[in-house]
Image 1 (cartoon, rainbow, N blue to C red):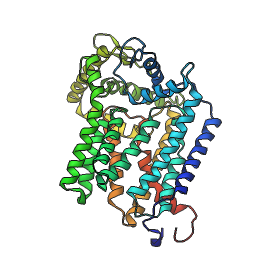
Image 2 (cartoon, helix red, strand yellow):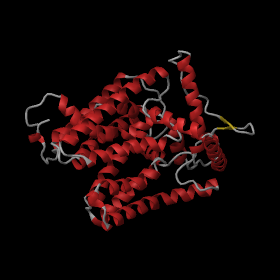
Image 3 (cartoon, rainbow, N blue to C red):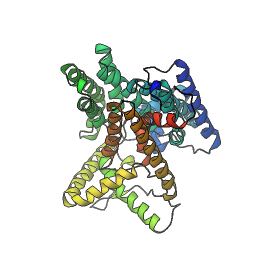
Length: 424
């Protein structure tokens, strides 16, 4: 990496178009080259269809549910409203999701141009190409998971974060835009509850020039706006569940279900059954013998059971602090590899390890070019996301949220190994 390649040069429109085309073509290869089941991960389409039928936000078609955030079901319901849902247009949904994920590749180029502006645009192009050619981003987009939508929204949020809080641009309109984007994230996944609050704090701690009153006022306003966007949904949940549920339940359920997944994984590996699925029936047995499965319950039952499971979880943590620490450590690693079968876990583990090492190599190259605090911010954000999940569950699909960050860090590493003319 030559020093004369370090100039403050933003990518041209041609770069953005090139990245989009590469990402789209790569995903189309997956689309036509693999067999896809007519199924949406976690059956979000059930809720979307019930919304359009006038039943409301319901899984089972008769009772309101609070076990899912509203963002992705509403996204599906809009598509169904325009194109119909009898039958569910799986072909169209995959086309739309591969387009959306290709747009995420564009936002990675945008994020690189904003956060790593000191680097040459070729490094930023390489970062976008790392995401554009990421096989698991493409795979899960076509597998129809909610991650495709909220990963894109998270990238938009990080871009606005830089403009509004880091550069302090756009005045009240910028604050409003960032707050609304944060609110939309809150409506998509409960993990964004801590992230939307902690991310501005990280900026304050990492970047000395931001430690002033203006930054603090802007940050507080954006967070307040985000939670105001969430408020109507939280009120709805509280009304139908008879308990405060800001985004969704499932915390208590997944805390305990994680043990079942881990036991299956360990037993199948020990027995050499590498093609055996680690998933189970999904039912949790309560002390009274009842089977708890949140998706077929009404909101009040689910919220009550979830509260019971959370309370029992805290009791277990107090009694077994060392086992809880082992659970966290296990999930910190499982976050990067845990999928359906042990055989597939080997693939995801190798991929994640290579991706992380590549990103760390890119980080060191950034350091050598005088760019230090921005890569540190991205690294801490990646660790933070993993940590937030770790007390509850560790699943490979959740690591997709870190891919734009890892890709941005990987740009200099890719640039260092591809043939290029001297001077960038």
